[in-house]
Length: 280
Length: 109
Image (cartoon, rainbow over all chains, first blue to last red; front, side, top):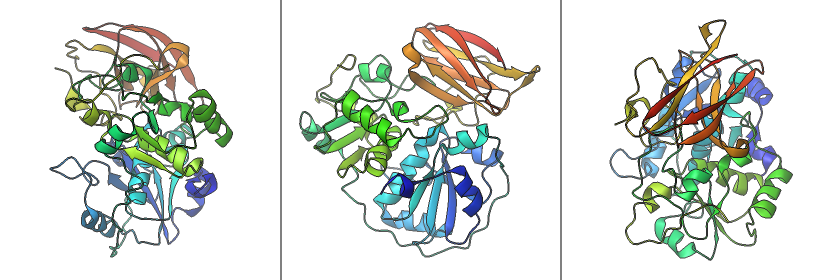
């Protein structure tokens, strides 16, 4: 994967969104955004209702993913273009999720919903009608997803990238500043983790910074050793999906995993090591 | 308690439907920064509010609500509030937050 394969711009979407074989999907945490207006021909996936198991804290299983995509009229060979709010956090999460279940042709709209809105491009309330398909998903690709035991074992051995804000990393905040301060039992970060906030990878309009800027950010400024494997985490795994996208898809680093349990899991585990304080 | 029902609970993202801030905020021990964005005395419902820390470090961003509203749950301290709206307009305001207090900011673009 590379930038040209993983990203499209607004002009590409305006030219291709209605074509057969191209499915535009809005993925937001604020799912009412779609109802207020979305890019023409876009369907919606709700990151929580559609992608999370309703009982356990986990993803929908392979059969559930197949049912979801079949019902939304997505075929295995379709080009799926994802976009959303929050600088594409949840779209990047969905991108990682699609890859996890083996969908090959996935792309992100660079800048997501924000750039589209700030450029006053067309939005519609018309909902496209897509006939159902018989989607077949693969088993989850374990090379893309880290779980807690693997994270604990990675301390001091692999690159651990904490992509939360410096205040969350240090333990001063437990959640982003636009949410009530609750969630994990303890604040802080996983020992030996580097703090590279996701936002450093994005421009103000939500687009990704250039490959050269990104390489400098992670390698020279943050001190990541690209010869080592990497695990990214945040609070629930969607901001770190944004960073996973940067490292794995744009910079083409081979062994990068997203720890979707993230701080809400790690910060509530009994007996695990926690480090406090600012990044060194 | 906070107005958790105005967010999506366990997500990191934007409060659902933007932030209608007309109702009084029960701050509890939260350090809240909230307000509205106006243009010609009318609410600006398409746009974004960002909260920036020292050195313009990104902290959080929310889409504006139908009433032009935004709300942040910050830590005590001084922050920069930046508003982005279509047409390239932007506005910066310096704001202070403290626990148990709602800091109101009205921004005209």
